[in-house]
Image 1 (cartoon, rainbow, N blue to C red):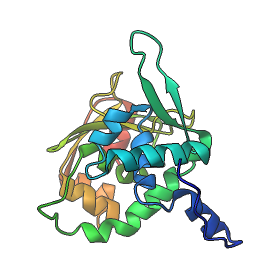
Image 2: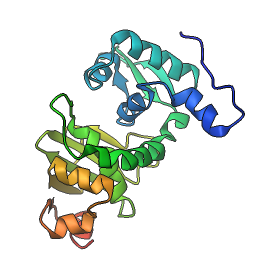
Image 3: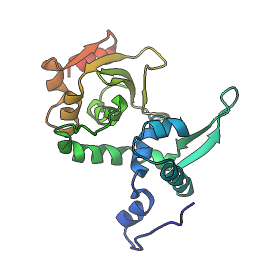
Image 4: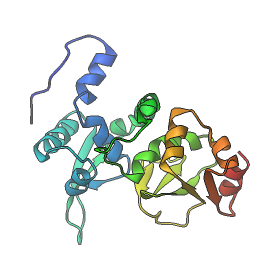
Length: 211
């Protein structure tokens, strides 16, 4: 484990950056907000990170109380990493940071990697204030689902299909997600303009169509 570096400033922002200011740390948090992840899964969804750096960051996060490591019961028997309560408190930090950075996504560079679930956190912020439930989201890059009102410490989103029948389904493109994330488009405007398709007959789907 690398020695902890510090700004040595008696300031809460500096102390926070001591813990999460290293490159890749907040992106690891982004991935772990989807629930427990194996090392190989984390490495696959963090293109560009070396195995040595990822292993070092995970150890640092355990030391700082942001994440923990445990072995899954048989037949899995693999080690997984997951956020602690302290680590999950970084959700609104990532959402605000993503909102601030959204204007920088005006054009996707040829070298840019993309995963569908990277749009989950900004979309979750757009869905805040609606009734609790599970929303399945389909983009051309893939599928993910988000849990509105997930306050039990569980995952707030995950890649792929939801394990239960979702309360609503959304079909949207990445450009619309980017506009929603940056505040250039509201969810109400996107739905009314047909840029977001809402499917479902339950209360949450009806609420989304009426936003």
